[in-house]
Length: 166
View 1 (cartoon, rainbow, N blue to C red):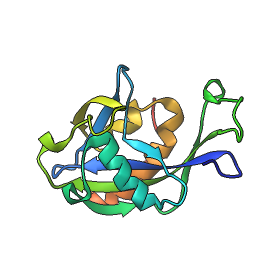
View 2 (spheres, rainbow, N blue to C red):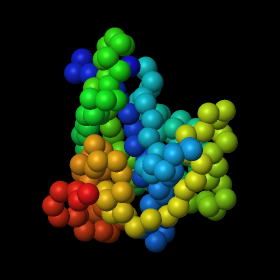
View 3 (cartoon, rainbow, N blue to C red):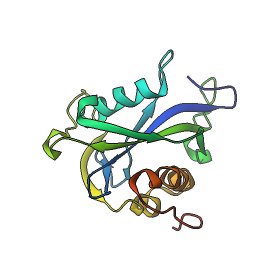
């Protein structure tokens, strides 16, 4: 499902612990780290997609988390030209995302990657709240910075100043 502007609707998941650290996941068989995220299916609300993706990607159910907040508007990023698949119609040029902040209310051992036959991650760790802005792939940095800035006050954290740094 791609909108008229070429953006695929998507949800991003920022899962925090009681120490305000966030879950940072490693893509399977890669050295690429990111927040869990996934597409919104036709006739699915962003919140429904959030809980479906949470279970598919991390093996967690709604009762394992508390929903703390969501970004105000859609946050968009464009894909680099080398990642755009031109042979498809409609052409997807990027993603528009609603980012959700959750607090984990269960034991860490509940996180698992085998909830589906096609896991997206093979490892995870807790990192400082602002760490992902510095480590995520460059074309996602501004969206990560904006999402974290919007959601930081919900954890009692100050907003970050300035653009994402490489």
